[in-house]
Image 1 (cartoon, rainbow, N blue to C red):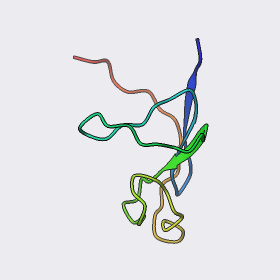
Image 2 (image 1 turned 180 degrees about the horizontal axis):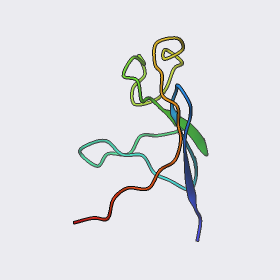
Image 3 (image 1 turned 135 degrees about the vertical axis):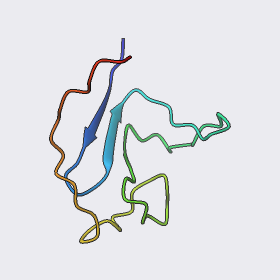
Length: 73
């Protein structure tokens, strides 16, 4: 089975790599031009949302440190 890895980058995007499909709210697929790695915007400043265009640089701070979520109720 192929895997997908999502990396939360410090002060930036979500890096998505591996075997994945990205769809909009209606289920229509984004055509990714054969890419196996993409960056998803987290800051909301990108002009190419949902993809990152680097607009976050100097405008978005988040120290990406993993933590455990509480148990689901």
